[in-house]
Length: 141
Image 1 (cartoon, rainbow, N blue to C red):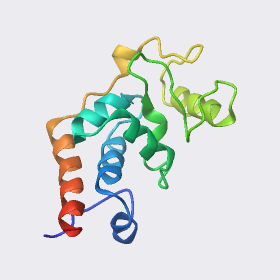
Image 2 (spheres, one colour):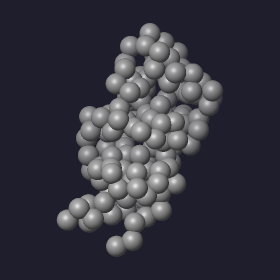
Image 3 (cartoon, rainbow, N blue to C red):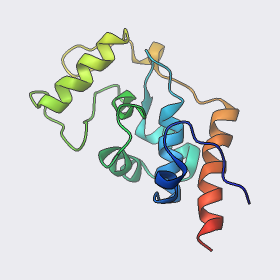
Image 4 (cartoon, helix red, strand yellow):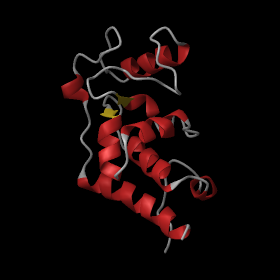
């Protein structure tokens, strides 16, 4: 099976990833500027859990090309960035800056317009993530 084309990393880097992490990064790469998604939404799309998605984000070697700062909690609160969750932490402040630069309203650690800026993955975006995951799973058999 041929490997899918990946825009966010080299083939060599891609082959070092777990199938689930690759699928997470594929979905995050598809979230457009000015939008966010949730840990649970990504998890559901790839058949995983929100905690595993958070761990993939924490270990994201392709940041900011794969924009893990565009992922938030299901209630519209920020969540963290690289494992840091305090609103006073420099990484979380960086997440706020990046989101605001893209036009996302952030106030007191929350996204008041969460329902407006929450990205819904298209069937094609979901399928691309599944293809990435499946390709790596087949290689490892």
